[in-house]
Length: 382
Ligand code: SF4
Figure 1 (spheres, helix red, strand yellow):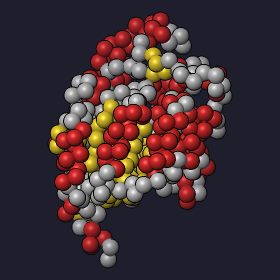
Figure 2: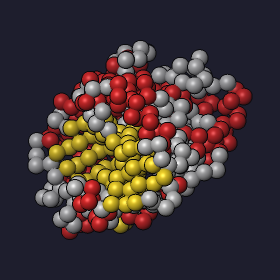
Figure 3: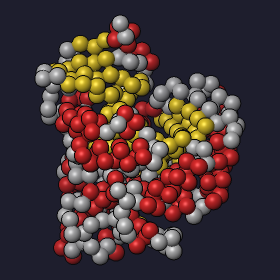
Figure 4: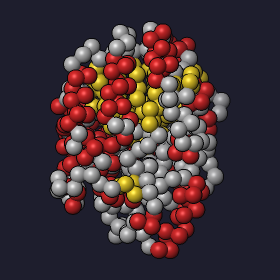
């Protein structure tokens, strides 16, 4: 499904960024005044293009829910660093949680601010966690031969200038054991013109792919309505550079919390050559209570969505990005939930299987108490 709107005209190629709710015509005056309390706490940022996707006649519009602040963000819940990223931080902007992957926070800006963002601390403590010492990061990664993947994230790396991106990508490319550079971005959804109007960026990606390093662009579409014609064009331009694409999305109340919506997204992504990679359980981050849904309800939604689509469209793992690792929800019975470590901070947990009694009110691993049984990976394979 592609959305029709005025920005599909290629005459408007630089949508204006909007950081004040006063500049949004669709919001009622009374609503705007109340929401100021929210934006005092958690910043607002959008742009003309993305706002034009909202159906203002629908109070439950998913695009609106994604980008427009909501009073429920003031409900006390969660932490600013729900996955303990701090605990894996080697230096500002460099995290090393999984042996093979170094994660670099290279930008504190996004094309919009998703209301459910799990890194809102970055918009509050601006720049404190951003990589400032690129040479030191290069030295660290160069020394750690086990690092094969460098993940560029933030914020959104594609909000940096192409010149700065080139500097970063070229530097990591020169480290022999770095074979994959991965860019996590929501720019194709928030502002596809950033990609379509910058041939230098596309050239940079193409030249990166023509080396020993494979470039992956992990995009972040949450709803099929974000896949406008121009967004699909941006995805296609990225694919033409030789970059591998994949999509990750959290499962979010009010945005994609029903099986058909998720199935539509999976299917539309598979049609444009973007494999669904992860569906994340919404992290218990401050301000996210109204966006999160219980783990078991989420599992049922993904299971039903998968039952509607073809094999190529059901490749996403439903996963919790827990402080201890990425934990996939693999099954439910009437009495138990089955989980498995997909990535682990501690290698001895790799592939570990966990069984707990069901808890329909659980939002996170920590809400499951007393595992019924855990199996190390080798016993699972027998
Ligand atoms: S694009 Fe990612 S980092 Fe940026 S606001 Fe959305 S969830 Fe947060």
